[in-house]
Image 1 (cartoon, one colour):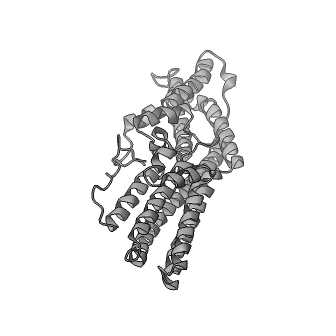
Image 2 (cartoon, helix red, strand yellow; image 1 turned 180 degrees about the horizontal axis):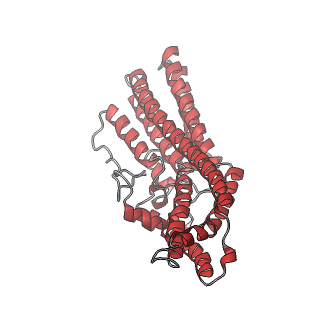
Image 3 (cartoon, one colour; image 1 turned 60 degrees about the vertical axis):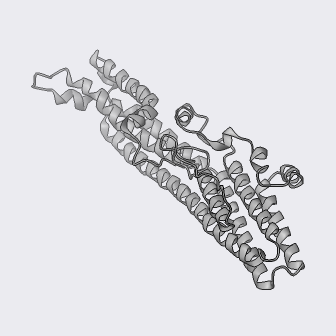
Amino acid sequence: MHSGKRFGAREFAMWTRRSIYVLAVLAAIPTVLYHFGLTFVSFPWQPIAIMGTAVAFIVGFKNNASYSRLWEARQIYGSIINNSRSFGYILRDSLSAKDHDKVKEMFSRHYAWLTALRFQLREPRAWENMNTVQFDEYSKKYDIPERLSKLDEELKLYLSESELHYILSKKNRATQLMAAQSKELSEAYAKGEINDFQWTQINQQLVKFTDDQGKAERIKNFPYPRNFSSITTYLLLLFIVFVPFGLLKEFDKLGEGTLLEGFTIWFNIPFSLLVTWCFHTLDSVGEASVNPFEGSPNDVPITQISRTIEIDMRDMLDEHNLPLPISPKNNIVL
């Protein structure tokens, strides 16, 4: 997540510079041909304007869908924050007087669940963008914690050796950690350490965590539909190619009867570049937000949120030497 006031103009220009180079070349080719007498390359601008309207609608639809996916992901982790705090104090107040060590063990297992979940959500998918040159270059400005460490090393901090080996043998580690919480809770209930009401309350929190995990996995494992994504790409490409051809006559007429006659045709290059850059960049912005867990600057900061939850829950147990909060690097926090 970008935590600054805005992306800087220079930062934005660097992020889009490759597309600027390509768009400038695409605008220059028909302009040069027209200048040297090949005036037949000019197209009527009206059909291109109609195409631009269609492209604007479909790019806007994609950006709206991308924002919806991003906002839903943030709501999911907002729910995890609230449910974790509720889980912490309900469990502490229900069981701490009878078995304080079990409370600490279940708290630690919850930190492990947060860790396993964020590692699973950071796993790359074929449709994600972090492996493209544009996004990979920008990612060098900040660190993706899940790529700097390994899951087993992180889980060692929270789990016993035997439980660690058991969890690592499973495919969906987060699910199995929540199942272990349920088992521990059932054993406490069977021993009479918690009553019916307390068991129900704590169990409801575990169900909520499972629900939140499933919602996050749905966004992670289901991409923005490929049919919508593909038609947006193709229509945008056609529009970008045709715009410089459609503006040739308009800019050529602009200088008629003036000292600039014959020279205004060159205005086609910067103005075509500006128009196509706007459409292409809008599409790129939507693409940058469509996968909210991949580790881009526009994603939900699940690592920071997980650390905040751990600090809050450790504080509930009056622990000292709390872990430090995660600070932004170059205004980026993940």
